[in-house]
Length: 291
Image (cartoon, rainbow, N blue to C red):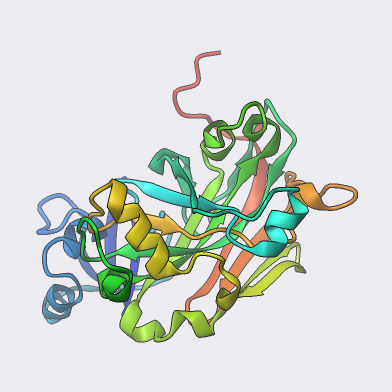
């Protein structure tokens, strides 16, 4: 099953991808579930199957995607989780996962523009696998962790490198508005099957920049869930972004950063392709801007 969140009537709605297009099952005012996160906390896939019977069908023509989970409790991102990326960044191999948090407000959906901020020209791509929690808990044993996974999506954890390096903390460079892309949909774990048999590819303007199998992850998904649930209660709809392979732009000689007019794609076997154009902040309306 594929869940998709999209923009509709100045609001967000979500549904299931079906042969006829999209089966609308929630998100609009008055709906049982305001978001996929709420659905996951209230029956998940089984509840969605029941709702499908009477759900109206919508065409995908002109569909404007939003981030798959627009309202996660938290987005946990993992740094330095592929050995080639550790090496290219000049770091030591980690003994524990490096975790930082990304704000939902920094996200865009499939097809929406990624924005190069006006205060930097060092916006970098980072193709990653996003794991969406379906069943929460504390102290989840690694051997049972995969039963807590609702599904998977593609993620582009865009990084503003100069701000990221202002201190030892990653947070500023990882939370600029419209720099993280999430989509195009959530594919349920039962449909994907063995995620570790899949691979990820990042393309910039059609050129392959990153490519790796998920077997190359230093800390695998069960380890990440067990580790994170030791310090926080994971909840349905929480997102774990598992790290990026080698090949990032900042490590290239010369460096390659995103610029207006670029197109960046993150493809994961069995999930799909997340594709986003790149624009300059000067060419868009910035929410909340004062100056």
